[in-house]
Image 1: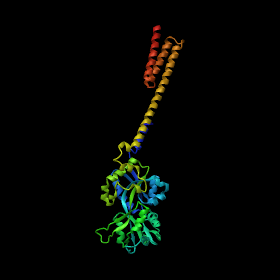
Image 2: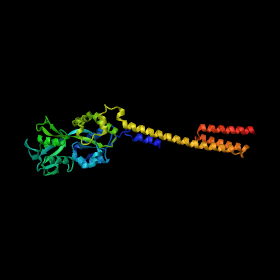
Image 3: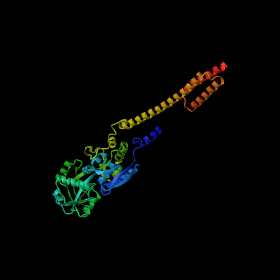
Image 4: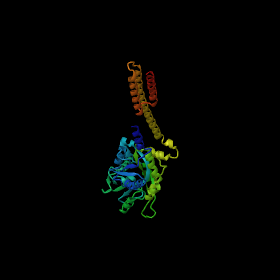
Length: 394
């Protein structure tokens, strides 16, 4: 049993064998998350990780899968408090592994816009097109507009004849270009709307995207930005998350070669505005230069010492039990010797035969390690002395 514990515990221990296989829940309706996963999966697999994609119907469902333990990781906008609220108590099981990139809010109108167009003019009474009904963008924009007192006509998908469309994307993504090429007009949010939203949600920040120098139709965009965060279950091993965060932070340049948006990966991100608390593994990585090895793994080392103490105590208990059994067994032989010596009816050859049989039985038990060698020697001397006296008398 003790040997089995010695084998099983190190194998299952996050300290000695950190998790290298992760199930990544990805909402099939979210273009941007699938775009990131297209980079992240092969990147991590090239570093020796095993990544299994778990499809989800929405960002909410992906987060529920992670909270429930059916997946290990997922992606979410850092400002998605509506998602956190809908998760209820399950939200307490989620932890932020790290921010991966900045995501920018874009809006387009089917009709031309004045520079002075307000948010209420842009959204009010309009059919607002989003990626998927009930998805993360739908919930977020609905929350923005509700807080601003703006009432759209309805939310519809991009394909359902919208008047305006809203989506999150990277700085100069293909979708932004595609909507412009289809003849739609980009909207620049006014500062009062941006400042109002930022006041209500500090995870969102004002963002000015400069015009693309090589495109005469490109324009400066005043909008909002957020971070896409990698989220995991809080029960993921500290060492596993430490190594995962380290791999991504240390290989940032490799990701930038895939897309410049990963230049936003940085260790000095604002931890106060995180939607979910920072995972202890990432926290340990960010403080890697401050604590010593023993401080960082104090709990694991304490567990190891406790296990060694338990194993040693068990070994001592087994040894004590063996010695006790040996003592009880030698006592039986001593008592039998005393009975033979005290029995005056046993004389001559009969006494010799009984003493020889007693010595032979004790020798066999000692050979089988069922008698302590020192106790056997004492019994042996007593028997030999008694036999010598018998032979001398005869």
